[in-house]
Length: 215
Ligand SMILES: Nc1nc2c(c(=O)[nH]1)N[C@H]1C(S)=C(S)[C@@H](COP(=O)(O)O)O[C@H]1N2
Ligand SMILES: [Mo]
Image (cartoon, rainbow, N blue to C red; front, top):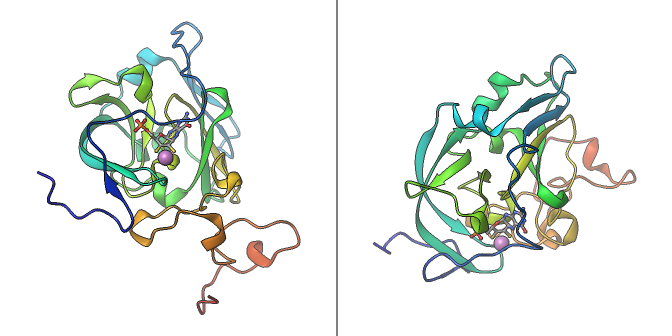
């Protein structure tokens, strides 16, 4: 154990400390659902109860979790629904390029569709064989193993299909829009002009082809 290299600038944390912004929400099964909305193929919204979500076929992955403020925790085995399966259950319109993953209390994280459908991205229900603890996201959390932790909302409640990029909670508060820990994409000031959604005055919505590195 402990021999896998850590991403640059990360330090190994002991155990699995809890880290998030705001209070831990209560799970109310009678009110809980998982929604898919936004640019669906038919324009319909989808919603599943927790029982329905629990019946969807799952897979197990092993991963480390990298918090953008430095700690990495290791030895996580998550079980859950491959995020890519959501696209089969709730087909997106062909123009969808990004998703917003929404959690309780309005926490959100934006992802490129390719990060969401990447084979190891999970809507996780279990950790190391047990249901998630409430501090770590019970009943459902997104796990995006190849990105910093802030891209994985705990207490996940909805997926919004988007036809353009839009910044989520931490992405609006100075964190990097893409969040690749191996490239140490922590801060929004590191972003190249084309890697994040700009304001209406910026060119980021008009040119998507990378021809050279401006930095
Ligand atoms: N709903 C919600 N999810 C969240 C956060 C949060 O503040 N709220 N913080 C994120 C961040 S920054 C990290 S590093 C991980 C931490 O997850 P852990 O406490 O299970 O290690 O949760 C992510 N998911
Ligand atoms: Mo984090």
